[in-house]
Length: 290
Image (cartoon, rainbow, N blue to C red; front, side, top):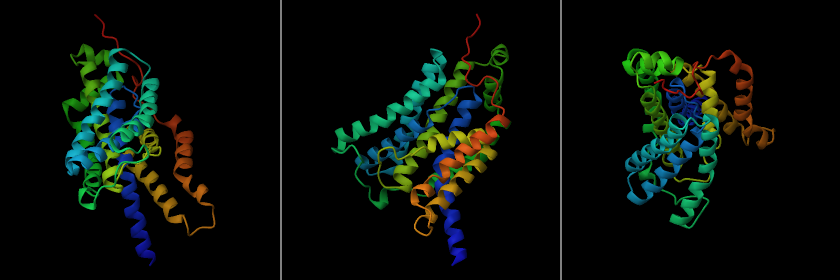
């Protein structure tokens, strides 16, 4: 029985890690290029709502997933235009997107389905419970290879560390940053889509429940490196899985048990943020010298 519980806990941890890992890997691309992406939470909500809605109307979860990727990339593009083109404060822009997507899905859900709380439930045959898990963990070595073994990864890291030097070497700083931010939005949206058409069978209001912020904490804890970021996400996923299994079998009030992943996030940020060195140009807009 104990072995079954351990296996169940491990699988639950992997399943709960998946959306956070996808969002964190997306944030890694954006932040290694020098653009802070606080908007991961909003991007996940955009992907979750789009995937559930399009899957409901088409009956095809792969079309829903593709639509979610497009939605995430477009929303991230808005963030990119604000921060790269117009030099807006990156934290403010990302926070605005998060606030926006607390309301937009409910508004659209009310218009499409006459319910602001949730979209209609999808049949089991229209869900993709395993594909995003495989994709998330497969993307870790892919991301490592892209960052450290490809010309694009070299340009990305150069733009995030010293955009002036990269510009002098002929790298289009704005183009690289736009690509990184849109890739960030696409990956975060896949994480959101997994919540609505993988883990669940519908979109519920604010269903990301802070996972975008936890992904950001994992990214910082992992020092903006793919393997370490994955391990940090697994830590948070394990904490969430443990809190779920403890409910109903522990004498501790359930409200305190549900706090475990969020308290762990605060502890990690408070204890390790000072030991992580962010990309040097992170959060700094770049003005091309003429």
